[in-house]
Length: 412
Image 1 (cartoon, rainbow, N blue to C red):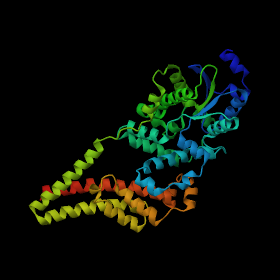
Image 2: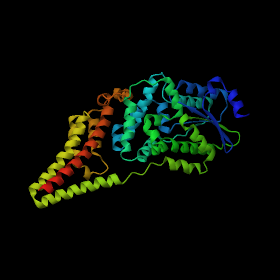
Image 3: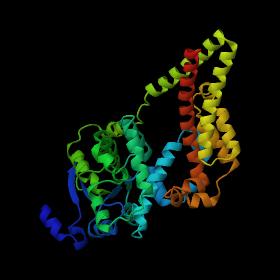
C-alpha cells in the first residue's frame, strides 16, 4: 500500500496530522508528531492506536518526566537538604520553571502538559505492549544547553526562562497548534533558541540523534525484526530530524546514546579565575601585614565585610530568616577554605532547617513560581532563591573586596 493509500485510509482526525513511516532493520516506525499541549494531539494518539496494530509504543519522555506524569505529587517528597548538598538546586529550579511554563499553557485549555504522551503510556498499558522511554534526561539536556553557549549568552538563556514564567498574555489555540512546528524546550527559551545554533543543537538536534539511537537500541534488545511495528509519539519539532536520523544513522546505537547522554565537562576557567582572584587577594593581605599591621588588619577587615556583607544582602533580598542571613555573612568570607560548598548552600540549608517547607508549599509550588511574589511567599521557592542570591552576593563581594584592597595598597 502506498503512502497516499495509507493516508486516505486514516480516520478524519489523523488526515491532517504530521505522520511519517520509516523502516529500519525490518522494523516499521510510525512517527506521530504532536503538540505537547493540544487536544487534537491526544485524539490523534488514541485514534492511531485504535486504527493500527503495534508491537511497542515509544514516547518522547525520559525516566524522570515519565515518573512525574505517573505520580504528579512525587515532587512533594523532594528533600531540599539533599538537593542543595548535591548541587542540584539549579537543575531543580530550571525544571520547575519549565513545568510552570507548560502549566500556564495548559490552564487556558483544560489539558495537562504532555497529555498526548500520557495517552501513549496508557495505550501501552491497556494493550500490554512494551513502553519505550526514548528521550534524554531533561537535566542532561539543560546542562548541555547551558554549557553550549558563551558567558554572555547565558544571560539570554536565563532571560528566556524567566520570561516564559512571568509572561501573562494568553496564547491563542491556533498558536498552540503551531507548537507542532517547534519543541516545548525551544519554546520556553523563546527566540533565543531559534537564533542560537549551539543552543538549538543541544535542545533539538542532539535529542533527535539520541532518540533515534534509543529506538534502534530498544528494537535490538527486544529482538524486533521484519514485520514488527512501533508507534513513536514525539513533538513535531523533532519529526523531520528524528526520521532523518533513523534512516541514516550508522553508528552503534548504544555507543551513540551513551555519548549523547554524557554530562558536559565543566569549564575549568571560571574555577581557576576564582582561585586566582582569591589567591591574589590573600597575597595582597599578607603583603599588607608585612608592610604595616594596621594596613593588614584593615585589608582583612575589608575582605570580611565585603564578602560577608554582600552575601548577607543576598539573603536579605531573598527574605531569608535572620539566622540564614547570619549564616550567609559567616559563609561568605570563608568560602575559599571550603571548596565545593557554596556560601548559598550553607545559608539555604539553614533557611530550610529554620523554616521547614510545609505540605502546602509543595502543593502550591508550581502555581507560586508563576508569580514573582510567589518566590518569596513559598518556602521551597524562597530557599532556592536564597541559594542563588547569596552565591551571587558572595561573588560580588569577592571582586569588590579585591578591588578595594588593591586600591588601599596602591594608595598606601
